[in-house]
Length: 478
Ligand code: NAD
Ligand code: UGA
Image 1 (cartoon, protein in one colour):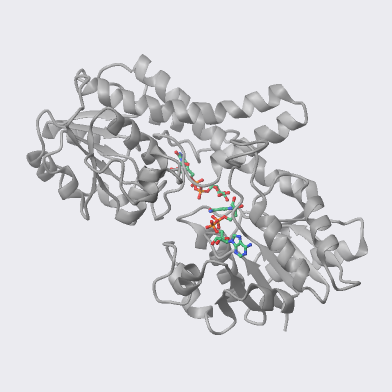
Image 2: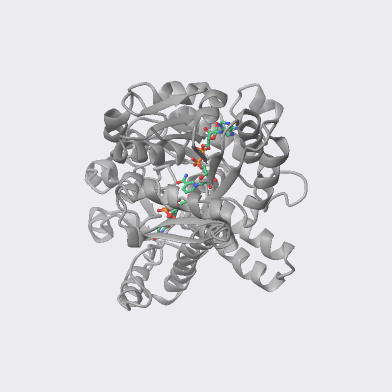
């Protein structure tokens, strides 16, 4: 029986391996992590991540041919194919800080693989990594392997799933990308072995093979292009507000051009998530390192535009509310970076809430999937570095201004404004009359996702701001 191990049981490692196990009952799949609490959760009824459909997939395969373990050495030593799906965050210190990817977790995983390997291994880059990482990993593996004659074939197999739709994306991917050394016989065999795994459910024409560097770079470029579309439409949302155009109508009109396409044109308070910003900054760093300043500046603008959009939203709220939000209760609906996930990494809600609270507002946050502890941790880290004594001592620097509640009505009760920061479906069907009756007047709604029925809200009596839409007389300039 072929054995697959995966180092990293996070948002990618967990769901991707669960899908492989589901579709390939003849393969044993073991997902590994150094984080015991995470592994315990994968082995429990309450999985460590919220993802629609994931519970069912795990329930079917777990204990059959899908296992979760902290014994990284044992299972890596036994595996034929080892995926590495560890985190690759932006470096926070040293050379390239603020831009380059931190490959410390990757290198540590590679050293473990090298130390325990007594047979040939196919090592698969599942994490998003800078182009040419495979070269560095090959060296780490070969120079640290104590067992003579062991061969490591490295493949790049980036993951394109999006959170919230991970199970659908994995079930029917647009494409599976495999990069490898097709100039070597062992490289070709490794590509064929991984292709065979995916071919159990992915049509062959959707499995692309390229050289290693094209595959590594394609992942960064795919995320850069996706994020660029959002920054592009967000930049236009600002122009729409100044000119009386409606960004939804503009997006629809341009999206019907099949060359442009309709997807990923929803103007928003800004893109979030653990990867878009990180991967663009990494791309920018690589361009800078290669001496391509103009190319680096071009892509960096996508991130700057995203920061501008978050900032602009905060300013719009403050100026509309008579330039004084100090002491006012503001209801924040949604904290996750998008709907159908509990993930808050780089969520625009952090910056927006921070901006509002820095101006003295009291933010009362409700999110259907994000736990109170997570919100406080995110806000504390946003304000101070982790090693700040206040955070270390467990004191929340926003203690007097930040609160969380477990339903939307409680968040809005007594609030001066409601701000929608995540597009959860349940916000659309709230009893908005009931919300209005419980609020301080004039009651404002700032819809950072354009999901509400603005005309209906106006007829109830709200003053409404919809991103990129014609402004109500009450809503004032940036
Ligand atoms: P994550 O932080 O959720 O999971 C990474 C896991 O790796 C953590 O649980 C951590 O404890 C574990 N880990 C780190 N070093 C380890 C080691 N040496 N040994 C064992 N375990 C170790 O990260 P994620 O969101 O799953 O992302 C993983 C990679 O996939 C990143 O490179 C990311 O850019 C990429 N990616 C993420 C997504 C997404 O939707 N989150 C989508 C596509 C690609
Ligand atoms: C994104 C990509 O879509 C995946 O293909 C990729 O694998 C993944 O990053 C990754 O590498 O981590 P994800 O971040 O999970 O997936 O979610 P998206 O649906 O792409 O949304 C990202 C952010 O953009 C969210 O904050 C979302 O609200 C925002 N967004 C998205 C918009 O503001 N407007 C849109 O039209 C689409």
